[in-house]
Length: 585
Image (tube, rainbow, N blue to C red; front, side, top):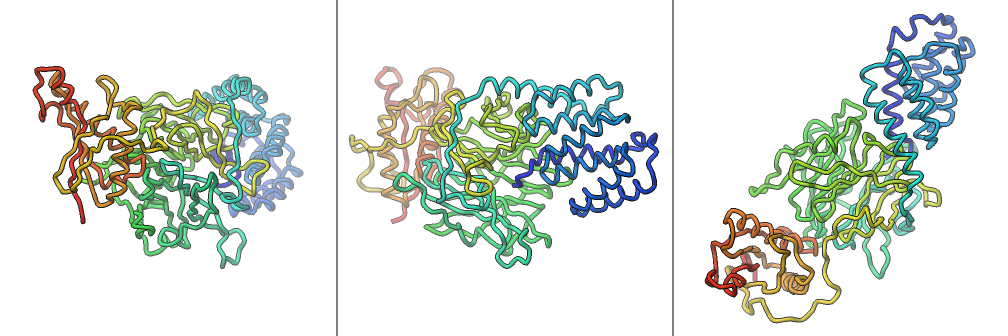
């Protein structure tokens, strides 16, 4: 993740390419031979990323041809590449002061530069000029509409700021290097993040690589972060990880080097692929490529795994396009294979670029970054709610000052919804990108996932004294909302005892069975019992029980234990049951 705004670079470069390749734009200009020669040298220097030389040659070209539009535009791009947006804007203003014909797209570039500088009032000047221009490209229509809506939103957001008090996670996590893309277990006690490091044996100080580091919440503070080590970290780039709720599965991104190698003998399909590793005891297994249909010849990165381990969200981009990136989701099927990933709908995936996606442990609230929705500039963070498998609510900008004219991304939110973590390059940090925490404003919080009570209460003994495969037992104090699968708070004590039982017996695997009475439609009863059994399973996973030890199934009213002719019998039949399906002595 570079500190220079990628959104502006991509936008600027795409417009520059159009300007410099347009024969109609410059056909009327009478440029001297010396000015043209200096310009050609500037172009060559620019294409080999020698921006200092490109800058000098552009200046020479303008001295010899003060109205040389191409030279002004290339000089603007050079300043963007050098992360000097103020001078880039001033250069564009100099061009506009010349008595030369300018295509409409130049005004969009001016509006974009003002946005990236946080000078939102100035955007209107350029947008008005663009709108009044008699000759506009159809390809620019979406960009204009986005900038216009972003201008209106930014002015409103500045007048309606949200509560935001970011707290740097401190020297145990952050260093003079870049730290970013954090991921957190559901209990909030294990933090894994990406750190960018100089390669030790590099002859050049500019060669860096990404590795994973891990820290643990202990005694009300984060421990000193240490490398996650082999076999996950290699001499190549590893980063952008997703940790399972129980901390036993890590899905991450590995990218090929110049020789198309992924490190440590790994094989891949595209430029960047998703790999998975499992924690066995205290060691991580050798990462395996997740294979097709997850990985393709394109670019797959930035995964986020749902708390139940059955839905994987990630970014897929066309590596031949500079502003490409969409959110996809794949589901783990009953045969343990991942389904063909589907792109989220168009109200989520914009014409711009989406990245750093995060699915909250509640399985419904999705956070992501985008430069294609109205916002403050660059990449802003948005939130959307899942309505059903194919429908999501329109994304909501988290607001200012969470979002600014800089890039904001890689957010994650704690299971209780109270705190959010993100990466940013801010004044007062320890170096470059640091990881911060802030208290999420109440109106932006997701529906929380209930976690374990601090004290496991005593109660009647519900578990079998003799553990054997096939033994079943009823959870008598599991309560749901009427005709819903939402667990009521009164269920926590019972669930806490089940968790304690599973923790004390790590070789036990169980099936959670949902049952209903015979009232109503049986199809509905089956779906309701399945949803309730899954809700119990999800609760166990969020509280640290491995998904590999759990399964769930709904039986509706097909397995009553008492008569459904009486209310007492129907109440007994509405139950949650557990069956031991595996036990190793």
